[in-house]
Amino acid sequence: MPTAPVIRSDRPGSFPWTVFHERHPELIRRVLAALPYGPGERAALERLLAESTAGVLEPLGADAHDHAEWLAWGEGLWGRPWGQAPFLWAENWFHRRLLEATGYFRAGAWQGVDPFGPFKAAELASPAVDEELAALGELPPQDRADALLTSALWGNRADLGFRLTADTADTDDGPRATGLLVDQRAALWEVLDRAGGGHLCVVADNAGRELLPDLALIDHLLATGLAGSVGLYLKPRPYFVSDATTADLLATLERLRAGAGPIGDRLWQAMNRGTLTVRTHPFFCAPLPYHDLPADLRAEFAGAALTVLKGDLNYRRLVGDREWPPTTGFGAAVDHFPSPVAALRTLKSDVVVGLPATLVADLDRTGTPWRTDGHHAVLQVHPG
Figure (tube, rainbow, N blue to C red):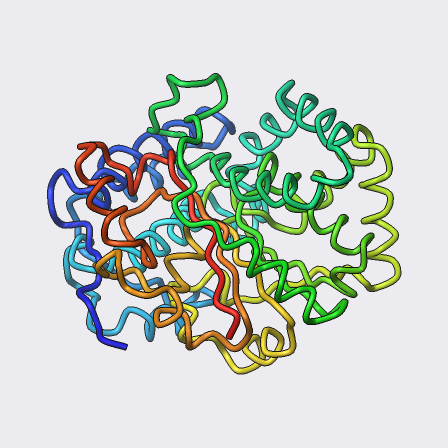
């Protein structure tokens, strides 16, 4: 596949530039307001913010548990301004450093404390979740599969990091969905039908209101036999603000068990039986594209009838966070993946592939930031 320039954050006014100069300052402000960090942690977060907007990249100290990995991942970048690093790499580095600043890895009172935990808990306890749980029980059986798939797709708007600076004027809970640009759900159902109850991998993105419909969809696929087993892949630790960890999964399951009829109980029992397995891997917190999958994780995905990747970050890692022409074929961009793959993604960053030229022209004529405003989505499938 031909290459394209990597996306960077050093162009003032660009979307990546606003992430570092608008979204991250707001994130730091909210983290400091959400937990009573002491002077050391507060000062470290302020230093991180200043460094990430006007400083240079410096490696982790030699005592960091992942010093060697990051030293290798950042080869050729250390000592350069943050904006000159690939955007995907720099975002990963920012969140790794945020955990360092809050004491997540250090022995002490804040070790293992999720700095985004209060955000996630507040969202999961919100009245909007009660409404969504009630709606799950009202779906007509004949439309349930497609409705759950649609909910899992648009649930990606619930990304807390995105909503820090998004225009949420359309609704109380986020920007209104206005356009599914590519809808290849027929190909997704065809792959699952052809597999005859095979193994499905689902790589989750956000916790809370996105994970709820993801779990409801998994329950439906297991209950109907469309999937014989499911591997649900989560982050091994807090990552991009609202990314789902095992702790988030357990909290979401409890919410489902309390308010969504038998769904939560069935998923709990599926975990007991092993038809639903929870997996994680250090790769999910690495600044690498899926093209660089480690051998053990590649082997797990290779055994799947289908791998479903949720969300914007997984999409960027799948196709490569580069300045691809949006008409670049989705299949060509993801042919490296070891199994048939489906991407369910709300557009919240610049990169996108697989769009018809006429559609791109129409979207460009609107004069809106359609690639980044969360108002559009894609459901793309490469059957392999």
